[in-house]
Length: 80
Image (cartoon, rainbow, N blue to C red; front, side, top):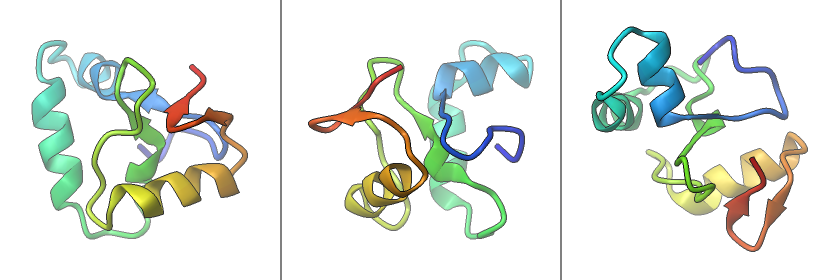
């Protein structure tokens, strides 16, 4: 997650691929949801269909953080 630059996103599947477990995208999501380390930018990981997905502090906060970083969002979907 720390390698995802500010203003950019990655998908749960891309993160799973990077760690060598391409089918573990749900496990990635579950692990990120339990993360409480503010130094890990979990909000930069989204679903492969562009929907923002879940977030420990709520999807509304995730959406605000992404917009604040300059991620292009149309309605509630990230433009991938």
